[in-house]
Image (cartoon, rainbow, N blue to C red):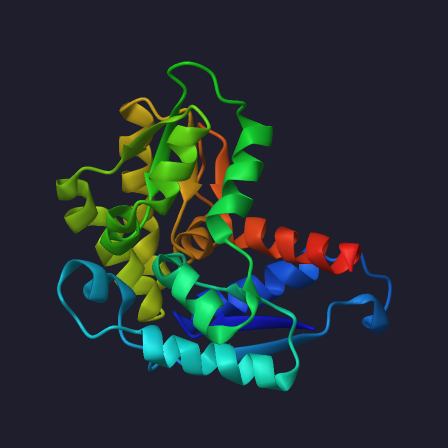
Length: 232
């Protein structure tokens, strides 16, 4: 049984579940993964807890992990990149294995764009995920140079787009995400990682054209879940 810790935000959780189903090589209902979804949007804001001394979401997330554990899951996927800042604590105190979204994304990036000296990867994420550093650490260990949006672009394009998605306004989010992507491409990004689960929703809805290959971290995590299931 797979558990999904979601609600951060709700649309991103629904997108993950859709991508999980699409990634499954099934010919009938019984071929699909058995899944239990915990989607509680009242979990405190993750970026604010990392960058602005906001209330920690750890107790609320642990409640979700334990609820899923008691329901019988053997592994959990979290449909929120920033939440992985607490990955170690959630796994240790929750007592359930949690697949890491950044590991799944980096593996897919390596297949799309093998690392070479000077290979530059654009990283689009919340301020919290950028501050947490777990993507940068993994990418740099593999030999990539990491390029994030400038603070000005974060405030003008990336963060407002994420807020638009959480407010269910994908139309407004589209042009902002497109601008942020083009800014990274112009700065030299040879590939882009959408390290916020709201961003792939916008890219697909707005049908944004990309010059560089991209990694949808939501889809990468979904495929990692399917691999876990097939191995089991």
